[in-house]
Length: 112
Image 1: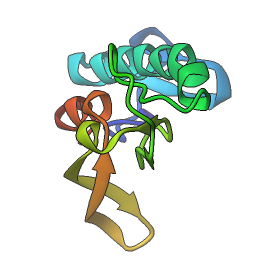
Image 2: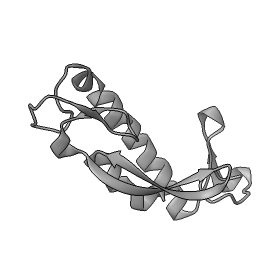
Image 3: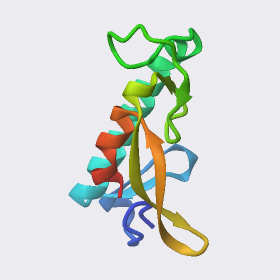
């Protein structure tokens, strides 16, 4: 069953990845899978800068005072924005307000 759309699929019509990540061949679902992989790479490459005490945003040298509630990297106040996101919870889909970095905020349209 696809982790993004919830539809079942056969071996020929999807991607069975590590950690039981199963994604069907629908274009939206494949776009999400690819974007999540790119996002994970981006987080890994920016982790060291986050630990250094400086804002993770490219070319920003301000102290990182706050954490993005999605990727958990640290940013200065200018590079975090309030965003509303949809989250699947035990109570169904809920809209939550979070502090997000530009990188995570840009992905909400695709991820929601």
